[in-house]
Length: 174
Image (cartoon, rainbow, N blue to C red):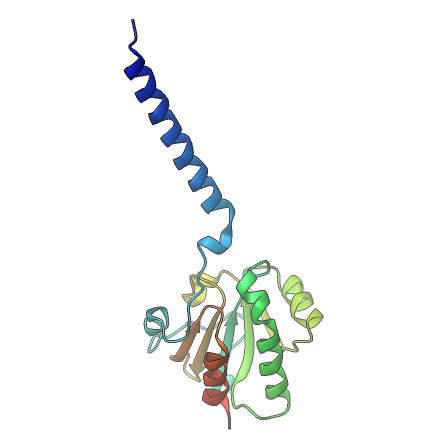
């Protein structure tokens, strides 16, 4: 015969197990929980600086003195919140006020990326569809400033604060 104490312990253990499974399912179903949202100056940026990134197929770093890579993903809430800043950068590039060429790398199809960016008024010549890991990026959004050899000069990870956005523009101004 099972004592009331054993029944209570079994029910408590089952309840704890169910709560743990629900938390894991919630975590896995909400991508923003496991994507970066870092402020400027976080340690995530440090591991990029000095690394050499392989050319994106169809684009060569040597074609421009510097390239600012926007590593973004459709459906990323932090990327979507950053779109007005990317529009500002695109405008500055077309006005000749920054020295870096803008390039977007997205894991989504390039036509999807083009539609997404152009729909927001962001005019970037190069939108490339490839895994973000191919440019050593794990989370979105990430900005990488590369020199002509593909070496990372600076990096910004996550949705940027207004101060960090100003820092990016200052790093790119002619």
